[in-house]
Image 1 (spheres, rainbow, N blue to C red):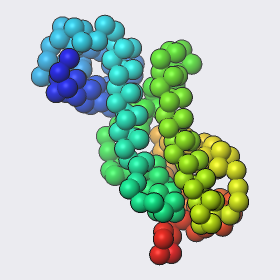
Image 2 (spheres, rainbow, N blue to C red; image 1 turned 90 degrees about the vertical axis):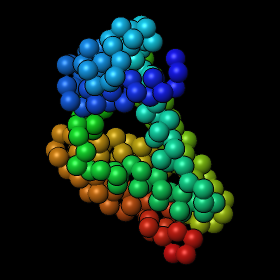
Image 3 (spheres, one colour; image 1 turned 135 degrees about the vertical axis):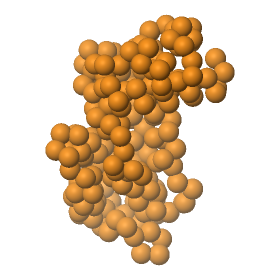
Image 4 (cartoon, rainbow, N blue to C red; image 1 turned 180 degrees about the vertical axis):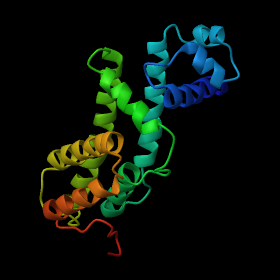
Length: 196
């Protein structure tokens, strides 16, 4: 499949998922959002589950790029992660957080979805653990267990997502709690980079 058609189908999947939710998502509704037919979607993806798996793979790739930072300073890199997770570019965005929560709710029943969300978790934990490891080695952070800090941030990120969806709470509330915890564990005040 050419990259342009794939990208169009995945973007249409995003829009249809946000508008209709998981339960109301059909290949026809995805086709209605795209400039391709449902037959063309079936040509590229055998099942709706396969299409959603590709959608989640694409989402993981985009999330990974949001977590990346060119800086060598671990404090700046960790601030980049916090920004990506707790300061969404468009907090008033369409139903995307709800759509992702609905997909997460399907993970116990769909092995492919569970695997993708495990991948999400693994990407974030690996990025954070590497940052903390570098910060401890460079003396920017206090001695701590990088894996535990990575698990803490990932768990709080998931909790923040649930609070956004279920309680309409802006993620900045959870970010403040995460920053307090990081200050206790790392001896560093989030928001401070190489100059802080």
